[in-house]
Length: 313
Image (cartoon, rainbow, N blue to C red):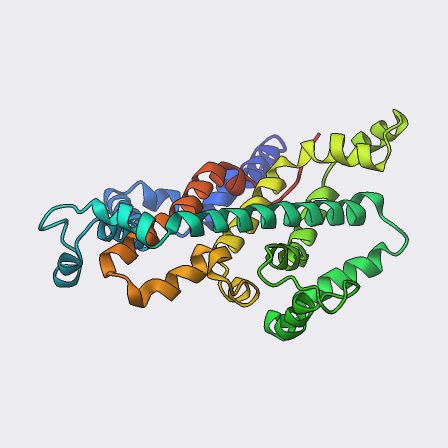
């Protein structure tokens, strides 16, 4: 083989597209065959259809059942309105079950949980990643260690702390107070470590330039770090709101008054006293906000799911 042919041969070996093709299940040669191509197309359509049915099927069925009379749902659960649509289910669920009140309670709980989780996660991640105190490694290890403690183990001591918070006297209690839900949810070690990892990938040159310009720790956090961290803020926001929206056990324990309970607690409580069609309409209403939040934040969430890096330059 001539000397001129060797580099060309090595270049052909090193082409990344060839390496990617070799790692695939089906080679490029087989992919060009009509039978293989048709079979792969059928498999892709089948898998996509299965995922759509598994993911959207229950939600679409709930939307249909919410405006279907009870007898039609029981006799023909998969039929599309054999005796017409009953839109009154939605208004009856909103007024008779007082969905509007519980809906507002859920919004307040979700908004407070979002604010406090974002506050603790961003400030905690900022301290561990950017400020780097002398005891930072110990603090990071302690935060990480809390992930190995089962939540059920903390249930009783946390409840006793809510019933009788320290430093406030024996007559003070956080029961039936939304702070009893907000504050425990704020101490989320997973969010802190997630934000810290994102902050670790931010360019340090920007921080040094801000410090040279006279920015202090608070100004650096508010004007430099947070504007560069919108993707991770969107991810933490989705996690926080969805977790607060679906939480059942803890709000039931610390909010025993029905007037301040969220949808996740009140809907199971009124199920035995409510017609099936009205109850399904209430469930459909309760799913609107989580679905809307996912649709709004899906681009941010999917783009940031890997958290491969913040800014590259």
